[in-house]
Length: 157
Image (tube, rainbow, N blue to C red):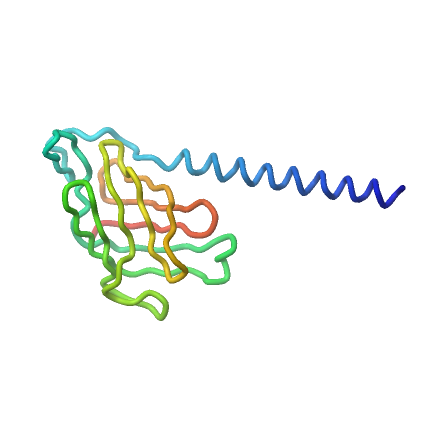
């Protein structure tokens, strides 16, 4: 009888831990949104043919990645990417490489809308991730976080 009570307590703690973890991930993704409304003619923006104003991400960006969760043992990483943007779509190519992420390969891609990222994808040595992201008020910094294993900060050069 005592063992059954102990098992119930253990399962209760596990359930509560999983629930807290799930709610924490859901909350963190909702905070990753663009921080400002864009105006036509603002610095680091461009106007699309439909009149929408989006961030202009073209150019070189320093990046610093931080692995956590299940990827914690892989440590951090960094380098430089060059983003090329056509309309609202963009692709970032690695200008520097590592053992696992080769120079000249795609690192990030996505699409922008007037609120910031419509969608963004990180291309890692372990495959593609579909994280959330935010862009700073001046358009010179981006933080991309998948909520479970990696966070990348990009700073315009």
